Length: 181
Image (cartoon, rainbow, N blue to C red; front, side, top):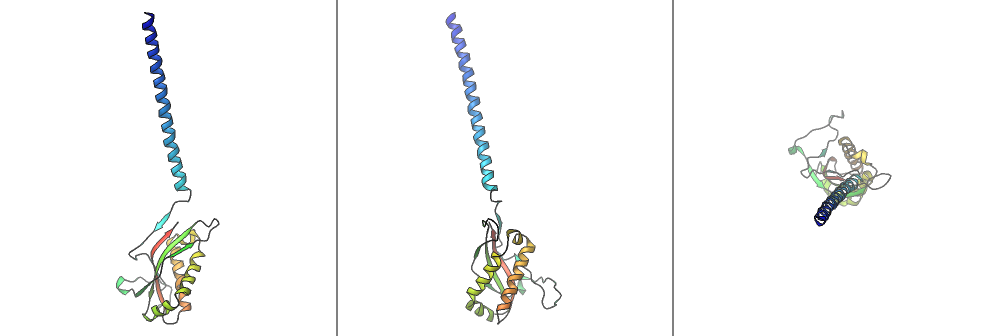
């Protein structure tokens, strides 16, 4: 009889220790899962997310002032009215910021009002790239992340390029890739 009581007591102790072990294992697993979730959130949120805006079909276009009317109205044209496009190489620049951790990757096409301008742009390609790089690096994330900011940058690029060219005018800017990180 004493043996049976000892077996029952040891069986109950085994069950209690097994239950405690299971609770400890489950607690550790829950802590590991929570720690992984917190780590993932901190790693993804640490750089304020990545803003990606791409328009590969050239639908993201900066509108320019309607110069023929001279009253500052925004021109809206159909695709058939768009002039000759002059693609530029991709620009990858650091944005102006305190930490210097943000950069912009943009691919731009210029809309020209005549074919003769493409020859001049070919000859002045390094100067054109330099002017655009200077404009883009002078902007902060806040200045270029909005639609209004992109429009302002586009107008600034158009004005700068038109001031340096002789054989025509740049009528518009098309961002075919615009990635801020």
